[in-house]
Amino acid sequence: MEMKILLAAINAKYIHSNLAVYSLRAYAVQERKEYRESVGIAEYTINQQVDEILMDLHARHPDVLCFSCYLWNIVYVEQLVREIGKVLPKTEIWLGGPEVSCHARKVLERLPQVRGVMCGEGEETFLELADYYHGKVQSLREIDGIVYACPRNQDFAVNSPRSVMDLNRVPFVYAPNISGCSDPDDLVLSKKERMPDQDFPSAEDPMENFRNRILYYESSRGCPFSCSYCLSSIDKCLRFRSLHTVKKELQFFIDREVPQVKFVDRTFNCRHDHAFAIWSYLAEHDRGKTNFHFEVAADLLNEEELRLIASMRPGLIQLEIGVQSTNQYTLREIRRTMDFGKVSLAVRRIHSLGNVHQHLDLIAGLPFEDLKSFQKSFQDVYALHPEQLQLGFLKVLKGSYMEEQAECYQLLYQDRPPFEVLSTRWLSYADVIRLKGVEEMVEVYYNSGQFVHTMELLEKAFPDAFTMYDRLSGYYEKKRLRGISHSRIRRYEILLDFAAEWDPARKEEYRELLTYDLYLRENVKNRPAFAGEPRVAKEEEAAFYEREALERRYLQGYELYDKRQLRKMTHLERVKNELLLFDYQNRSLLTNQAAVYRIQASDILSLRYDQ
Image (tube, rainbow, N blue to C red; front, side, top):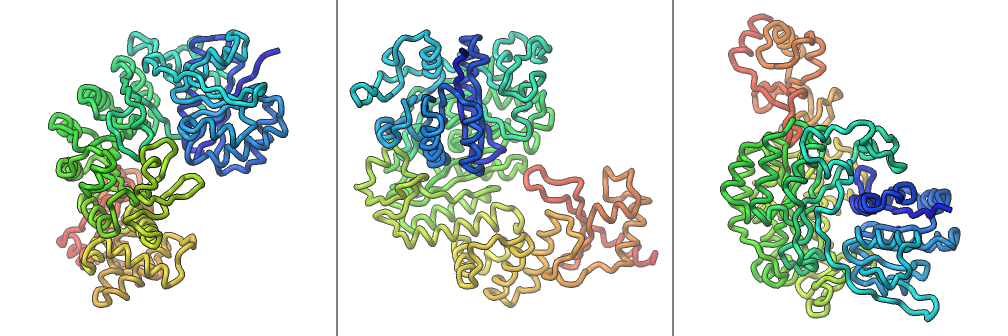
């Protein structure tokens, strides 16, 4: 009877895909073609009911079930494991992933339903485990990189660690045959070359399973840095996939016009020649469709890389930059190497180009960082005007150096995932709660990109931006607005009420800017109450569109539309006595804001004359 092994992934959202399980399966099938039918993949999300997944797993009835375990899904996985042990008592359960690798023995003590844990890098370990269940390996003792239960002596066996593998041996999971191509022309697969696979809905198109989802890709493993809060610092063996292979695989994404590919490399630009070659290839072969996401150290960007970035199409790449703190004592204590002066120069320069989305991260709860220090870190990063500023909270990960230092730092954190900081020697729980409020306001009123111009004016009414978000959070608390799922329009109304209470002399200016911000993002046909009466007369609007339909002075790409359609597809608004035309067909690839045209005074006069 065929041995059935199932790799199960439980993702945070449907749009995510689990690179790990696809990589393990692809490697196993590459090495053992006969495993193509016996090794399968099942993906779920944490938003599904446990019973729903349990029923699906029961229907599949695997002989061996392997779960990919992370911070966001471990509680969910443990719930499933306990139930699976009851309904599928003969199924052998294995766990793998960063959330179980470092404390494997404790995991097995906590979950007697689990046979074992795959620790560290998984491709070769999983292959040998599959060999064991297919009778090709006689004993689990022969498999490196696992910790497993020994029922006979009621103990656990801890095998030798697994040596890291050559990254070039890992197949390209989205089309396994691609990595073996020798010529870019071979990237178009014939029907015979496409691998029929039970895990993809269509054997004709192996990418069908990833439709409308973010794709993940790695060109390197390991990290050169030693940040104490991060598990990547444990893996000191930094390896790179060959550029020849990487280029062919990236061409596959480009040809398929995949919307977004996220590189999972921990510090993508830690080796200049590798990063520059990949960015150069993307710039040269770009077809205007795919966005590539990279996590980089901005202080390592050199002049050659910055010039290349300047030449790129808007939206071709986006950068995530982990600043974490600008307190030098904090950075030294967490073993983080960063020159914030260089980070600032690089971020400002890229921002001035207007073609790259930048996402900067801060972490609250680090050693030597109290509320005042964190406020300074926030101000330092906010002044760089990134497209997104992620205010995160320290997570004390199992096996990290930060966990070892918890007592020294008087670090209290949640016993449950995500093991988030509650307080430290420098930061009280009350301070953490306060920062949570700031985080929420930054997410709603800054990272959404919906209130850009209003927030720029409002900031002038406060000593600094941090204070503004802190006071806004306090307003939410005072008015009992927290914990409610507000509509987008309601967020505008709340901000206007807050601004009017704090800076009443400028209330009408705030109303005007909020209206401007609203129409920048959305062609709202039902004018919201907060915006007040329309500032453009119907006759003036009608005259403008009648002439625009004839002369096409402002709108490009609307040649097939008449004046009524033009009126529906765009919007006229008067802001600060200027007549503005919002063009929703032409939006910024970075901000999604509509193109805005200022109607010339001479055109306005001629409109009035024509009327």
